[in-house]
Amino acid sequence: MNLVKHLLNRKGNKMVSVTPHISVREALRIMAENDIGSVVVIDNGLFEGIMTERDYSRKIILMNRNSRDTQVSEIMSRNLPKVSPTDTIEYCMELMNNNHIRYLPVFENDQLTGIISISDLIKETVITQQRTINQLEDYIRG
Figure: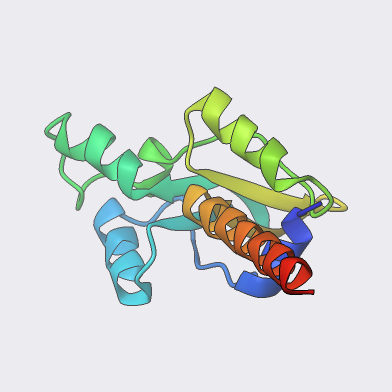
């Protein structure tokens, strides 16, 4: 069974964070510098949400807002479902699908320990399937 902790062990749990009071433009610059599609929003050491490229496109561009004058707190995704390292990849995919989201925060003992994306889940599923195929091929070859 593939668990979130296996994914995080392989991927790492590096997270790039911003405060909710910086401009969306500054957060986008940080995302571009780190070649990532989202940033974790932390305020006074507490997880507040995630700002994603999707938040930007839907809440800034489509609403004709200015990214220089808009704070991250105004567009970030809040109240995301939380998962734990012992949750399965399948459960996470179901949560994302049911909630129409692409990122999930991972918490252990009320501490944010990572962020996983739909892309991470797909990669993990492909790795698992390839491992199964290799095992079956080894079995057939005897």
